[in-house]
Image (cartoon, rainbow, N blue to C red; front, side):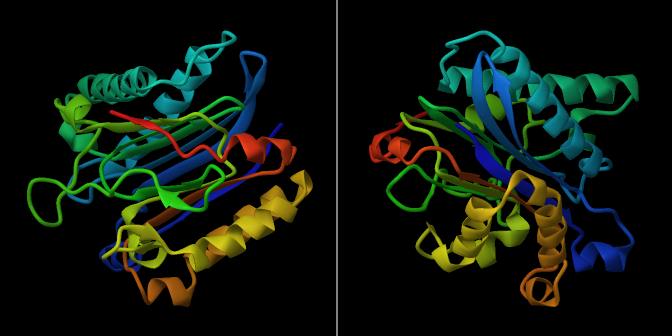
Length: 268
């Protein structure tokens, strides 16, 4: 049982013009935890208004990966919304601790957090802030969480907020994910039908088709190709923001697809 994965980020043209670094980070990986393969996908977008938003995004990804590895190290640990809350709290605390050591505030490291954890029995999805997670558990592509905005236009929520637990949204699907795409808000207008709040399937299908047919040895080449796509003129003509995209496609037994045809989920 496993997935093929690829992820990449690219600096936005507006950041290049302003001389600022890319503030997106993303991750997609499969490892054995608790005796079974576990897919983890994370995306974090540092706030442009934050002093160290890009560093915050990097810290967020590292903390989320550490948390999941530790939390699922024992067999049969359920994927629940409580686990999502604990992961977000761990990320928040890690960034707060780093801020304290440098005599800064968590707000200086403001960043979003999007996460997917999937294995044979279930898939956990959670999100704080903008960007989106699109997945297929056997019934076609769906947007797992409605993209978030903050209290005012052009604002969003961050895992560094003191009330991050209140704005967290988490869902549990009782099936493994067949396809996953998590991305920052720089790609939302390309990847989503914004008015309908649905996934734009033609954007995703080529990625998933290539992943499903790729060998393990081709993953590095796919990562380079994905980065080139994100930096391409065709993409930059549609968005001037940083872009990050993390993808996963199931390459295991087709027998699991029958199980994945149950669309039910629980939401926090």
